[in-house]
View 1 (tube, rainbow, N blue to C red):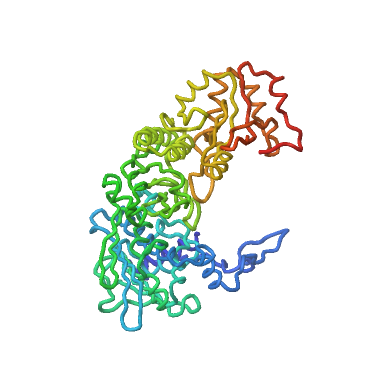
View 2 (view 1 turned 90 degrees about the vertical axis):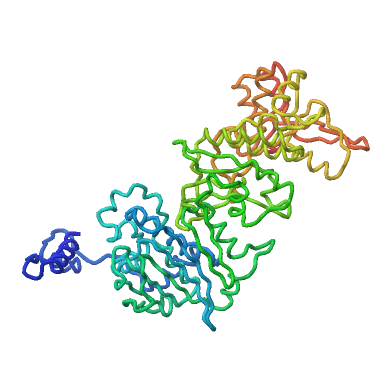
Length: 567
């Protein structure tokens, strides 16, 4: 570090004051290798050798880790990285240059003769030659906040969280798109004549060339333009129109950057458009959903939920999302139109969420494909409770109500008047269930999956009295799997057990013992007749028995031998 500072300061003095006022000591001697350092520093008891790690094929490593190993075979994430980096450059310039012109990113697909190009331009902070060498070309070095262009501002930026890039590997995904690449850039505080060009003629197989820009290549404003020569199949793939299975290029960009505060000007052959997410917090819900989902859903069952978008807040009472609950079969692919919402970071989509709308999140890893929403537990619970009230008033389909209630409860909300279970007297909400329990002296609690299977076989099926069917599982908030829920009791079944225990006055110690699970299996369980088909045949299913004045001797009856335990 001392050696580096001496060299830089001496070089600065040389440029500003001439050779007469340079340091006498210009560097620290014998730093080349540990062995050379022994000429200046004597050691005893150990022998200095060079144990630095060595990689024989750096270009291949960079190509793999910065490309397919990080993103798979999908080319679009590489375009996402280019646009995201351009947005970062604009946000950074806003922080250090408040008088800068309004920032924007241009994405252009052009074809001249047999040459097809993707061009991504910004009027952001730009780069100097040293930034290109020390940051852009240094794999794993995220240099935005250490850029000399930022200088004395780097430690005092008001909101560094606005800058997405922090892993230093996104740029190298560019070579997933093509081997010939040009990076034209000018630092925002330099002159037009300081525009430089970095040219890759054969990807990472050859050293890039850095040279001064001439003529029309010089950038009038600060910023960066990146051009990639595309092969014909990839160019045609990007221009392919969207369909029910695959979004077009414009829709993909909109879905990828639904809430960005940096607008994107998209220029395709014969088509120009703007993707602008700056008003996502107050614009009409349908406009927001069109970007988030990439299309207009004309299915009446889906479209009626668009009016249910409601705000979400973080612990500082800042607006961080607009979402609505939708039935599970809307988001799990059980119908032709499958929809999900987006978790976003700095305006860019990171992952799906099983609601409609958007919520801001914290990125978890370098590929930017996982994130945790930054909502507060109180906010998500209040939002879910409001959703329950809205849905109960507008949704007549009882199966949709049951599904929405699962999400509401998983978020810690009050399901209110939504139906949560089924009995011989019909579907019940929690208030209705409380009244029902007052009228009986015992109940059986069974998983509703068994009833669903039977009803596929028999149109008419009569339920037994005193049997309650409900969902026992917890819905995934993310298509990719489970997520730590805001509450411990995240299922309808958990809450119904609590309601039963309270009404039947079952103490917690006994209840916990009765509901205990060992090695993934219930210790106490039994079968009961839960219904009869039209031919008079009875059907049994495993269930939990509860009664008033329940005791140790009561539950002992239902203890299972190890060979009979079933989840």
